[in-house]
Amino acid sequence: MSQEQEIIELKEKLAYYERIIKTVSTPIIPSIVPKTILIPIAGYMFRERFENIQTKTLHYIGEHKEIEHAVFDFTGVNVEDVEAFDYNELAMSITSLNSSLKLMGIRPIYVGFNPRFIREIVHASIQVDIETYKSFREALNMLLVKSDQNIK
Image 1 (cartoon, rainbow, N blue to C red):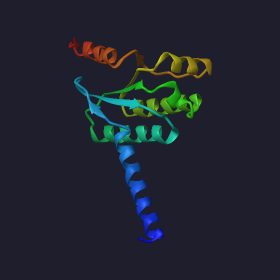
Image 2: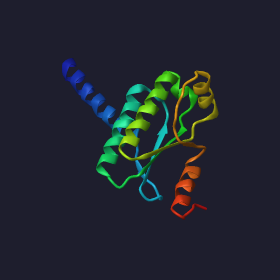
Image 3: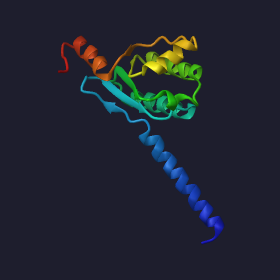
Image 4: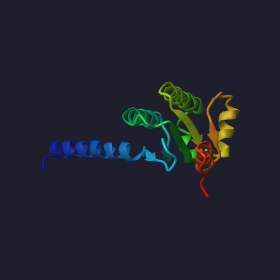
């Protein structure tokens, strides 16, 4: 195999793996709560990944008109996973996502921010106006109570 052919094959393999990473990095899971989806977010955060989360979520909601609530679970994101992503930029990205969802008639809910992450945002004097809960379970219970159901 020539060096040029090997380079072409490696580039194709890289593109293939990048598509896989994009696909699995933003799972969207229908919830037990009617008309609700869960978007678990774990690991390293950077601008392109957050844009992918926003794009995939908005596309999914566009195809599933029955969705009324989107719960974003940041439990799997550590402060170290965000260090390369400026907190001000992250806050603006979350605000943009929040606004986009509200324009679509969706109630965005955020859960699982760890205390150190919150401290960094507060310390940076970043204003973020979002609905948050401590855990996914707490958010689901709140939604279920509104529909006269609950999780044990």
